[in-house]
Image (cartoon, rainbow, N blue to C red; front, top):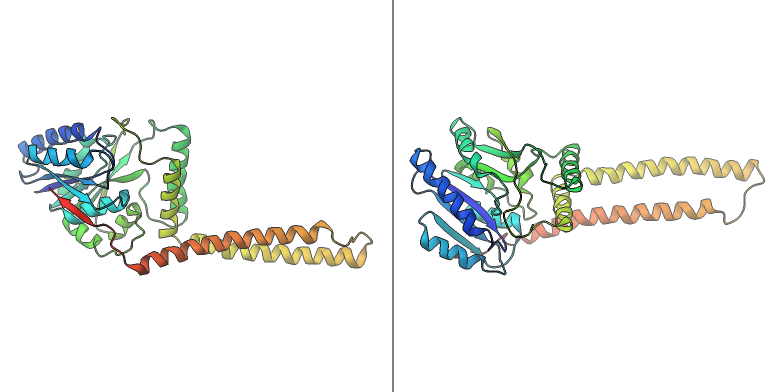
Length: 310
């Protein structure tokens, strides 16, 4: 069975030698145990890095038979780089994992065993978030719960560390959207799946490629790409405002007809205008987000362009 591991890499010059060393040692063991064949590969995908990432990938590919590389023409983001690797490499099974050595590669053998038991997709899921800060832990877990509330089928505490069979990859190619959120796309493929659990380590070297701003943007893309719930919330909010408006109208008429307290220009005429105006602007913004995604989809631009392969 041919295994290919795909590793999206952006400015990862500090970790590539160590990552390849650990993976090659794992390959040696798996080949010795006859879990995978000698044609198995490790493929680094350079996502338009600005450092020496590509030069190191070339060097590693020349030194080691099992190492190969793909260079994208420009930075396209983690999801597109990952997709470029998945769609470009060969292999009976393909595992995607980040290059920063935070994910435990020792469970790869368990993932292969799960595949041999009949699972086309095997998700690597974190047991806990002990290595995260309290803020990151709360926001990350809150995001997964929010996605579930919005009806999105997503594996809790799973990122992009997974095994996929060749037929699962081929069916994934039928998904043509350019607004990528693979954590929710993969479950849509279907087929029998399984979870394998692991503890996540600290980053070996370098800096995280997902600061808070990018994490929030990624989460928002996930929500608006896979759920129409925000649009339905606008409808619910509009109906609620309608009920409040009816109640306020009755109250205003009561004050006008049955009391002497009505004052021209009072705050109740101003506050509703600001309130409703704010809701309208907020609603237009959400609708605009969806229209923007439709706009990007209709362009049908390529999700990635491969410049070189080694």
